[in-house]
Amino acid sequence: IVGDMNELGDTSRKYHKEIINKILENKINNVILCGKLFKSVLNDLNIKKDKIKYMPNENVIINFLKKYLHNNDTLLIKASTATKVNNLANILIKNQE
Image 1 (cartoon, rainbow, N blue to C red):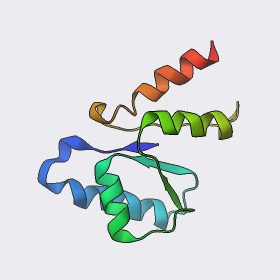
Image 2: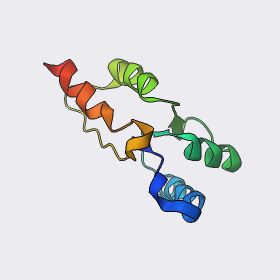
Image 3: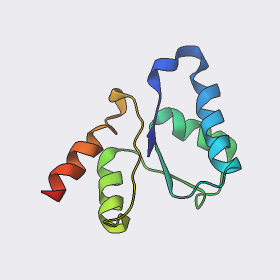
C-alpha cells in the first residue's frame, strides 16, 4: 500500500509516476495506491485497473483488506501522514487483538 508522498514539492508528480512505472516494470502484484496525486497520475497514464488498484481512503482499503488479507500475508505500507494511510497499521493491529 503506497499513499501520496506529499513532502516532495514541485517534483511530486514525477516521483509518483516513477513509482507506478517501477511497479509495472517489476511485475509487482497486489499494489494499492491512495491519495489525490496517485489518482491524478494513474488517470494520466491510463493503466489497467487489474495491475494497480486505486482506493480513495483508508476506510476503503480496510474493507478490501478484511476481505482479501490472509494470516500469512505480508503487508507493506508507505505514506505521508496527511494521507492517513499510515493509520492502517494501527487499525490492523487492533483488529488482531
